[in-house]
Amino acid sequence: MNPLRLASKTTIAHAIARLVAAGAITTSLTTTGFVTLAAAQSFDEKFSVCLACHGASGRSETANVPTIAAQQSQYVVIQLYMFRQGLRKADPMNDMAKDLSDAELQQFADAIAKLPAAPAAPDADPGRMQRGAALVNQHRCNFCHNKDFSGNESVPRLAGQREDYLLKSLREYKAAARTEYQPVMAEVVPPLKDADLVELAYYIAHFKP
Ligand code: HEC
Ligand code: HEC
Image 1 (cartoon, rainbow, N blue to C red):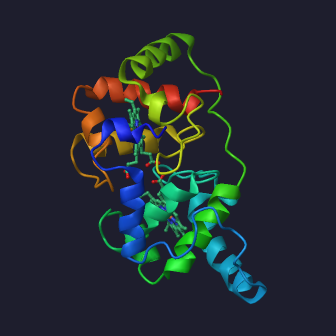
Image 2 (image 1 turned 135 degrees about the horizontal axis):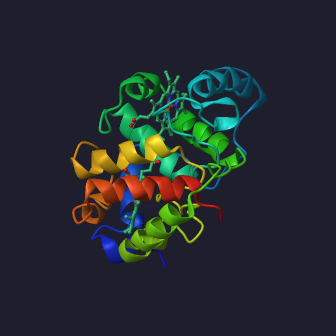
């Protein structure tokens, strides 16, 4: 069962059908074997440009630049598609994605999904972890994002993500400043106060599966 079916009128199947119709996805989402050797050389060069910002092995060491290691490939394809089409506005990424072909979106997504997941942030404060866990249970964050926050298909992995980027994302959803492919987080954030967002970002960044 896909949890999004419960949360949204649009099913993931419909969302993917729309992406396929729009030409964003040209191959099965689980296909990884279509990269030729010649393409791989230039692909590796392009990928190293991505990792210059997103960190070696996709573990970002830069404030507000997300860690992408082990991110769900389906989520990445959708986000890169939204960056390319200008639907999700974020300065470097709209430029980075604008000339990428549909096949490249999928190649980047597959390469990103294969990077080993980043570890949790160290030195979690037990009191804050307890408050964060209560908020997660209350708002069922780990229902869609998975018990271990590894994500699922178009629902992003949150485990191992930078705390500053998590908080920035939550605040953007709260301010309706970040477009989603489906308005899922827009339904989640309204009851949350800014102080809750701070605790949730802390908890998830320090969460050890
Ligand atoms: C100049 C720095 C820079 C470069 C180069 C760059 N990125 Fe990004 N990327 C960012 C920033 C900053 C964000 C966060 C945007 C936001 O705040 O919404 C981001 C966001 C993303 C996201 C969304 C992550 C999420 O969790 O939603 C993906 C996927 C991504 N980049 C992939 C790539 C790929 C693939 C490349 C290479 C083609 C690339 N990036 C190159 C800075 C960069
Ligand atoms: C009904 C399913 C659902 C629930 C419940 C849910 N999420 Fe999400 N979340 C999603 C989806 C889908 C996305 C991707 C939306 C988009 O395209 O921006 C997302 C995106 C995010 C992001 C952005 C990640 C990134 O890499 O940019 C964060 C942070 C996040 N959720 C945190 C939470 C927290 C904290 C909670 C609980 C308060 C929560 N989510 C509850 C489905 C859910």
